[in-house]
Image (cartoon, rainbow, N blue to C red):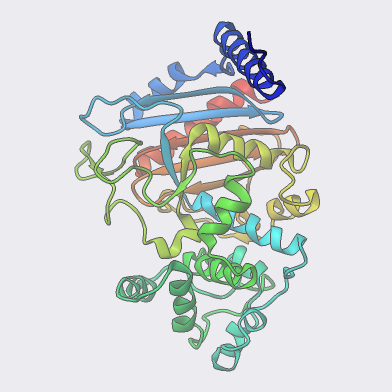
Length: 404
């Protein structure tokens, strides 16, 4: 009888060990899902009262999601229920991600908060308007650059960009070139400067970040934020796949109570050019993880920013004038920081860090209380005054119920 050689014995032993491990794994129970308090009863009441297609929310304490829920449908009339894992568009809440990218570059010593457009783009500097040339990244992120709020000229520029060739970073560079020689309506800087909520300003901030980092904004937000934070649902642009109802589709009101859904396509989102101002989407759970990380202000990983840098992003820079009946997703009043608003609400003892976001078909609110290491996110797939009122009402109820 022949005796197996040593190598054969090792192969046989390895195979037996593998089978044993597989058998043990099959007998072991799967890890239990993370439990949190259900919010469906609260959300259903608001869904019905405000006549929303869908509504989702989550509450975070000490970096842990303690309550979450989602109610309604992805698309009116479809009968497809939303879940807490469905992607919602977060609109201008993306601005905080753009400010975080800038903070990462500052922490790495690649630029300073005082770095100007002229310094970042020396080849264009001679052709820039003198005031435009001295705009800093901090001023762009705090809406104190002197660049105007969205206007007809900006909308015309967006339409024109559709006929330009190149990648998105090329188009943002082109946008910078189109605007850089125009006289500014205000002087850069917060001293005596009128606050102007400018998506163009954030688009140019994106171009500045791209120049310094030598990668597109889309690559950077994925590689530097989404991936290390394990925001696995996070994406850019349309939250749904073309031709599929696989996310909470955006809606608009076409009558007093008639909601029209928008499938993925050219009409369901803003141009990708301005994604640094408002182009992200994610599930309410991932949105809550982002909120909890911010509320901790450096207490927990991943260490994307120095704690003092994260606190700087949240800190007020300029008072915002009160706006009567603002467009849903835009600030009403408070103090603007770097991608964040400090707002005083009568239902919270301390000012809260806040931002609203909308692409005019979806709406998202994010609330932070760094003093309490507490956060709330609320999202819906329609943008209207009623939707805005609903999100504020839900945030108040959740704060009163869960805030420590």
